[in-house]
Image (cartoon, rainbow, N blue to C red; front, side, top):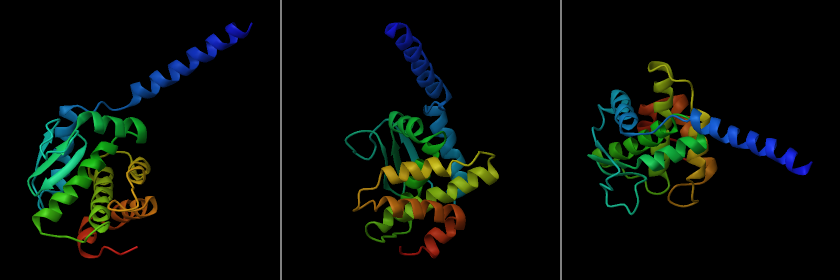
Length: 186
């Protein structure tokens, strides 16, 4: 009797896991390149980096998401896929927009110091979410983006979870120009 109850429960759990994976947007080169084009549509007048996929273009030890100057953003498709699997569809777009924020900082020699460089980039990512929702027809993915930003907090260079949450939402509410002209210190 115990085995007959466990088997249906196991099958249900497996099917639930498969359906969640099946609902994740596949993050591949096409998705990343299309995302870069969308981000360039909002932020391209401020910086025009090339996005390198799975190349460790910034010399990082493993492909994650990294901006290493005004002209280079390096992303790993597996890292971005993990972000979407864990935090929700389209979160990879916010991660890339965050890195675009760093490219803008490099372009204009902006250095707010830690953790405000990261928080300003979070603000930029938040502003892209609003742009994607209002101009590109995406559903809001702010909650997933905030979850991702909070998970990347380190209480040092990247700020606290509460700060990452605040600045992502502030960028969403106030727009990209305010991220660079009126960024509050919280």
